[in-house]
Length: 361
Image (tube, rainbow, N blue to C red; front, top):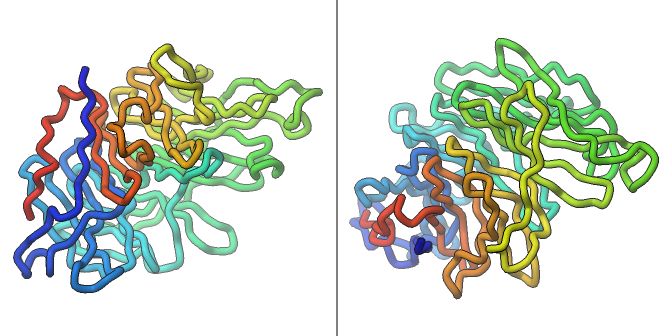
């Protein structure tokens, strides 16, 4: 199939002043909703250098609108199927058409994936119900499930180890992350993935024993595993480390089963990947792996139905360094490419016609 890169290029927003003042250039990361309809990104104000405005693009109509409640600097951290957005800046907010901006109200931050491979990834922290996974900047570093509309916060726990990090969630309110039972290399030594929900509490996931008890750099720490994403079918994606320091992708078909290792190489790859952890997961079991850096070229391992390929092998020449930040259920990926343009990239060319290129506000 033909794989097309759709870039939301500069110069797309020559809009009336009441919609997007002075127009602007799209120059930042794009986030996409699970259904692929909404894209949240930033537009640069041409009249005020350095000032960026938050915009939401409706891909079904090819129209864009300014989200008026925020001043630079802010950043869209997620958008759901209702078009609601989590916004991060000097604080953390939930925004929707019906509620406007709702602040979390105390110092907090969203979860991020680690930068083992040269870049950071953004997990799904907002679901279609409007719940948000938040890390509170208090002494305990609590993680909560925030319902901004009903103004409730549910503690994710109890923590069975030394520390806990909630990472991602699905539409059922199930949250996954990592519990650390000891500290060590990468602060991930003797770590286990977990799944949590408000009814059943926290359950530590079984994982693979890839580190022998008497050899290797991690032998004194025990096993290392993380759960990074969960879909509505209960499939969980994550990562582990073997005793040779290889970072490997894991997938649990359900929380009650042992995970399987994801394949990290295929004949279609131009070279073996450096970083093979699974970060993003959709309802079709497509996955996007951790970002890797090689000679200033950023790329990802992507699994289409668990068949791996390198993103760089399918991106048009001239945009070889792209970072994926979100994955829709139809396989459409969103992020940013070298030079700043926002990125929307179909995994399968037949899924999406190339109409996003012609966005008109």
